Length: 143
Image (cartoon, rainbow, N blue to C red):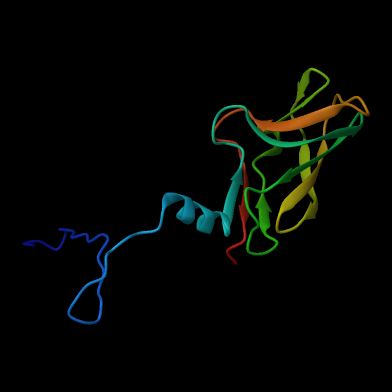
């Protein structure tokens, strides 16, 4: 390395005590994903029109939605919503961009939300989805 801007990287190195090294193995991708999901999860945004939650329209202006996480999280987490109008709620054959989304109940395995909508019909089933990969709800249980 002849210059201070050169970089040197090591990967999958194991230091062990003794004269013989054990077989080196890294955890499976499924194990690592499960460990990450314990701290951070993303709802929606993986593909276009990704389903986030299902629920019911309570009135012309409100909808109640709920979803379970892919696995139990470390603790009750911080929920970060995108600008609410970047998500869609489909109810009764119409798409409605909510003007506001708020938490109802947040725990270690699920979240329920209240959404302010414009054109709901009370009693209709509904679902929330992200129309593009840039729109998702972030669940963070790291801190």
